[in-house]
Image (cartoon, rainbow, N blue to C red; front, side, top):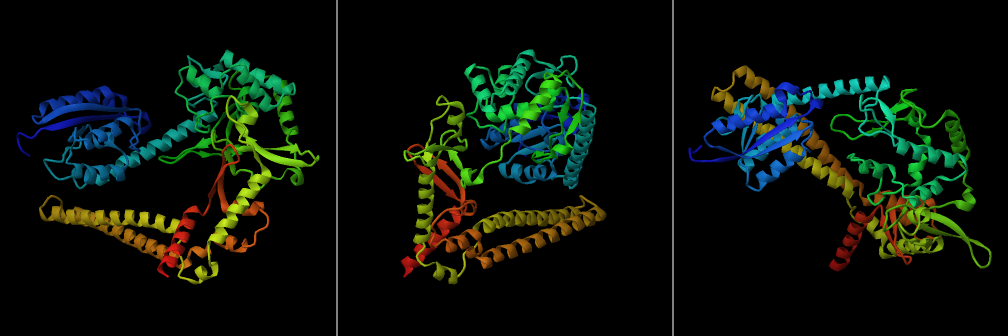
Length: 536
């Protein structure tokens, strides 16, 4: 390191109670003081900026200030990072190792961890660094399990532990684990139940509330300053819907019972829905909004109004596949009478049908028009394949989805194998230079050899998988077999739609866009036919 060389330094601070961080020693204020004092005493370090992620777990690098710091590094504004200790930087040992061993060296970034005695320009990384990272992640896992156990214990005790309450309730200022009634929203809830018991349908209730300008639950929470986002709704939906009313009428929270544990999430994984019988329900934990008599009437009505569909009259082979091009909602099927008195069917935008022209346009599409368009399009696809039998007998096409996935995984595993081989070599060099003992070297070497063997087996399996995808060929896929069977197609059925089509997008003026399940493979198929014909 040249004496005159300056390092524009990022002071990085992270704190998360979920990781079991101690408020006294690891607080943002204490970290800031320690780090800024350290930098001020270092002759060649100049603070460029302080990056703080308060309340973000170390098991993920999806943190706003961390991302901002990396962006500044990539733009050449920062060439040194200082942290209190490795756990502040991250608790995921794989990604932490990737940044410290690959990303930062490639970008010419100096890394300093004060408590761990790490300074990348003064000495090589400590060989115990990967093990320290593993301990950090394991510690986070242990804390995560303990937190989950604590959460479940609180749920079973009837304590509210969610971020957002059900519409109609709010957290008690005296105890955040207790719910109290939000009178304005609660009156809307009572109104919904009254209207339903009086005979009004769910969709009609939603329309009425929209017409009266009453904010839907998500908009009401935002208006009250809550940083709430409903991940299940479309971005354009900011009004009452059939679904909102339906969920509200079934919500046992309004009877004064605490219902929690509907979703489960493990560390670094997505939330998963829990079966209803496994929900945690504790009765009588808070004041009910709906009295027992109204609740029982509502549940009885809900069970009575489930009607069985007359499949002969109302069968819809396109159900679940057609959506409106503008609002993204499902299209609804309605019947109408022709001049001769016979019944016909058309599709309309669900948003338009339920909420009116203020929210979307009709996108009207007669069923016979849709059937004709889809049928003709499938016929065109079949006719465009000049000689199916010749193609079947020719060398097979690969299963492109399998091949592409396997290629990506193969690249990743080969990269990891290369990394293990480099680490093994580095361990030997450190041993020869007397930086680690023979016992330490043999321990590390054994660990790296085991991982090398594992990665080599994975590579062999993936290479075999890719060969199989080519051997099996494209013509073993169900969609192409189905196309062969449909050579003289006369009429569509539900099985054809499910096998062939992914989605149908409906525009105005009877225009549609069909997305097939085999779209990408079809392009390769036609491309190959074109190349063969060109060669001839």
